[in-house]
Length: 471
Picture (cartoon, rainbow, N blue to C red):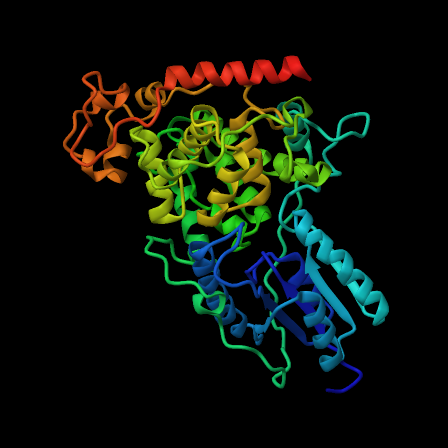
């Protein structure tokens, strides 16, 4: 390759698209050949923060990305292992003088980025990092005294008032050098995993845009009235697409605002609720950025050191949807079958694990990450700590959801339960609203409730109260 045209490396991570990608756009704007590269992690068989479903989806995303890059004279270079070593090698073999990447929101990714910046300085390579995964950086949304918010509502007011960044176009041409070596696109065998027995959505940028288009066709306009009903398709279902960067948050915000401008008053109210959910996502990004210790301990120092029960048979029953609480079991089975769980049910199942079974929220957090396609470290941690009563702007410890009354409110006809717990399909849904009065299972083969909610609620209140008094 002529020295006069050193290529630019775009390091793909969680931004697996070609449209509205800040780093890729900047790399292409330099007018030189662009090398899009993705490094496969080299762990095998098991991981605390991911599993077969998400890795299968990742494989589909990479395959789609490779095809999309070809449409703009690009080629996805696949390498394996440590990004620091891999980028050092790629810089040397390609003669690249610029490296572009989008910043990772979690502390693990940031630690790697710091090493990459030092590598670039060592090799006299220009390092270009971009904030692409959110509309605002954690340091853009601060209190008047310049401190990070710890409560969502004032954060969201500030977030909503800020001017939002515009989308950028799709590069016209990348002209990736043809002589660079690349591994084949990965399959699950790369990580020593088996194909998941799950109903997963189609992967890739085009599929993500189709899902979002469907959401704009009516779902976001009625979001306020449908989002809490798990039997309905009342949410946009693009959370996994945001997680893998199949569609940009700038595109989402811009298109939602266009829909809002054309909507009726009642529809605008629903769209505003949807926008506030985008703010929740960035609130948790900010919490993780300013308080990375939340991954290891409770955000609220009052609750650090809480006693939790050791994992037991009830924990296994929870994981497999066999607790005898139909709404909890439906949620866990949906997770296992699809890599997704409705957000309302995520709260119910998480609070059940922490408040009824007294199991450490960190165990539930890890289990969700191993199965959720949209497993986002910040949001998952925030949601689990909210349910446990230990997090930023969390539910007070004494506010303990009753699975029976939650069923009456959000699945009164048992539609969601019957879909995911088929052995209960013929059971009168009124029986899903309280523990069996006769002490008999609701259906053959279905377990009795593994605990008594009222008793466990009292135990939880006593544990939290005693812990606070002893501090």
